[in-house]
Length: 213
Image (cartoon, rainbow, N blue to C red; front, side):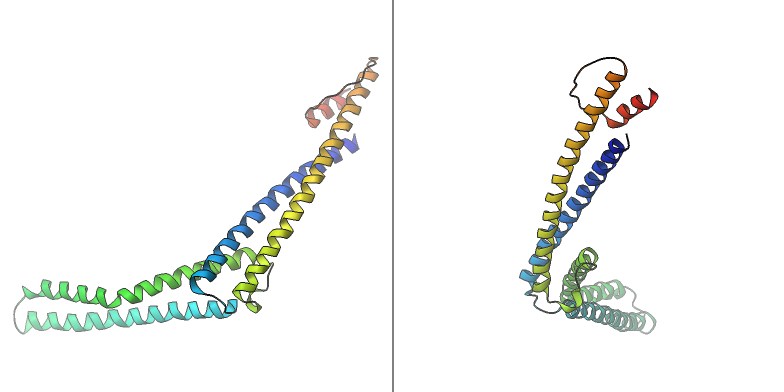
């Protein structure tokens, strides 16, 4: 009985291992595609930490410039509207002033916003790469192309592990089936029935039947 239960546990562990390896393989393959597209798009040949530093500085620079632009906009057009209202006593021009000001402001920051969105996308991409393979690869000391080759190696490695695990699962299933047959024959023999059986059944049900005898 102990051999039967141990075989069942081994089979379940191998099946869970295969599922985890398949999930890891999908993540590695996804990161490989993302990293390949990143290098092709941005011609990335820098060290990973240098690329991160470049992106972070660009994002911080945009935030500072945007804050300064907003302050200048509020001061310039706020002062203009104040003059129109309190010195010239002309409130009808204020909506026009606001519309012109907003239009000019949006036009002036359009390119900066576009650049920021690109940097933000790069930041999220680098963060995802780090989250998935950061524990497996020393990213800070490698270029993006070197990381790409390392991810390819990880994909090959996990594929080999999946193949080995699949072979183990087949062996465990074969062994478990043999033990099931032996147990069933023992149960028949204990009841005075001489026969050879071949069956596949749930090991927990069969084990419970044997225990109740």
